[in-house]
Amino acid sequence: MKIFNTLTMHKDEFVPIEPGKVSMYVCGPTVYNLIHIGNARPMIVFDTVRRYLEHRGYEVNYVSNFTDVDDKIIKAAIEEGVTAEEIANRYIIECKKDMEGMNVRPATTHPLATQEIPGMIEMISTLIDKGYAYEKNGTVYFSTRKFKKYGDLSHKNIDDLRSGFRDLKVSGEAEKEDPLDFVLWKPKKEGEPFWKSPWSDGRPGWHIECSVMAKRYLGDTIDIHAGGEDLVFPHHENEVAQSTCANGVPFANYWMHNAFLNIDNKKMSKSLGNFFTVRDIAEHYDLQVLRLFMLSAHYRSPLNFSNELMESAKASLDRIRRAAARLADIAENGADGEMTEAEAAKAEEAKAFIGLFDEKMDDDANTADAVSVVFDLVRFANTNVFEENSTKAYAKAVLEALQTLCDILGIIPIEAKGSLDEEIEALIEQRQQARKEKNWALADKIRDDLLAQGIVLRDTKEGVKWERS
Ligand code: AMP
Ligand code: ZN
Figure 1 (cartoon, rainbow, N blue to C red):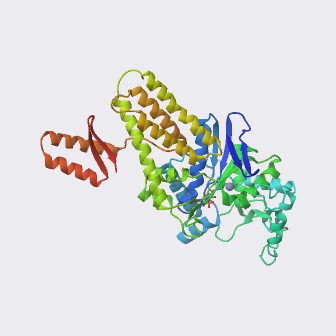
Figure 2: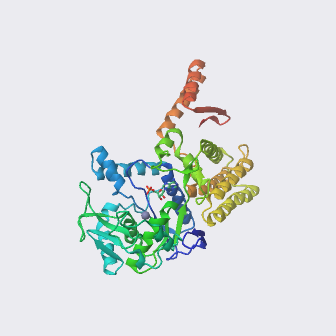
Figure 3: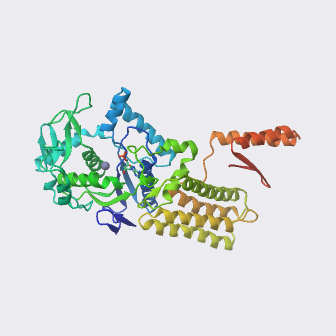
């Protein structure tokens, strides 16, 4: 697989540190509110990268944190008159619900910043001991001048950046030795949560959290580090500085960054107020639609949110589901016996779509093209598998190929039957009974009631079929 690596700025062949294994760290959300669909973009795309790596036989250790101590969380807590912990815990629970709705698998580990403070104090002490950090009045800063590679990840000209800063005295940062130095530890303000440390009662800076959690759960050097492109500078640049200087080895071999989800071509963000939460979207759409919408674009291309694109993703999802339902139906009710020779050849053709799909994903996780391959397979299935005479075995083989591709994308082509489905089926049964008894009024009423719930009935020779309109 080739991965576009922000560090090298080209597509590099992916070679894991340990054959057959991948360590992957994805910066997670700050939990002070419901997540918005911009935050959902890295969750969906990197979950898909993880699924793809697993499909290629890798064992993936996937770590994604929750930042559960931060100015915004503290502000929300003060506004509501509750603790910061209560705010963070509440929105972690809500975030996990959204992830489940989007079929984003839980990470191998979801560390919480507040549970990792001892590791942070240890790493900061190491940085001070090695001369990479200094303390002033209870605050500890990283000394960016000491790390010669500072700026390599974001490809920034550090001297330009430095001279672009206003006078440190004017900006109120006179304690810093250099304008680019950043906070590793800061003293508490009145009413803020705090931890004891050798420097002050206080809390860690944001960047040190990820360095420490990556080290603890994945090791000193990791294969893939990912997140949204706004994190390249300063967050990831600072993570590289801290980890490399503390551990004495390179931090991450591949850096993947997703482009923004925009609205009216502006970044969707809480601060601009131009956002939809995942919960807002769930009121109108199955979140599988959101997932397919995200994957229909390449992760490094900006994606503009619009109703038209969501409607188009909805129609696409319906097409996949209709094809899968038809295949499942033939796999259950089709002809018995072995596949014919012609069918066996066609089944091989269907399987070959997996190879085509893999080629697209091997090219820097090009989900946009990979989704097109799914539609090529849907078209193939619709025109090469027949209700009238195809065997069960053949329909099953084609369905398996479709299921394999959908699994990698995290798209669910056949929804598991829920209790709601059983209720619908019981009503259909009642309607059949009413028809037998020539109680047309009741039969029509049941059909109309179902229609009002968006359930459409279709009479076929195998009996009554239903689908959500
Ligand atoms: P935050 O909670 O702001 O730290 O963001 C969590 C993750 O969501 C980070 O990887 C961000 O880069 C990413 N993110 C935030 N807003 C957007 C957006 N509009 N489009 C894509 N990714 C975003
Ligand atoms: Zn991070």
